[in-house]
Length: 78
Image (cartoon, rainbow, N blue to C red; front, side, top):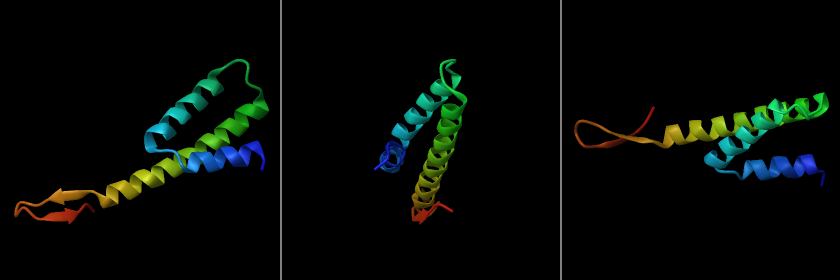
């Protein structure tokens, strides 16, 4: 298995907090003067994929949130 595919599989298993930490690492790498244009493009693509996955996770969590009505009944957040 290629290193890139292995990294993507590992990112699928990251928590939201771990995903944000990984995105911070990617931003730092992109800001580095030592990174090549090719590596910058790959890091950017990987970051966008990870950002999309974490966004989908957060959307899922938001839909599962419950809110308490005035009557004391729990309802799904919409």
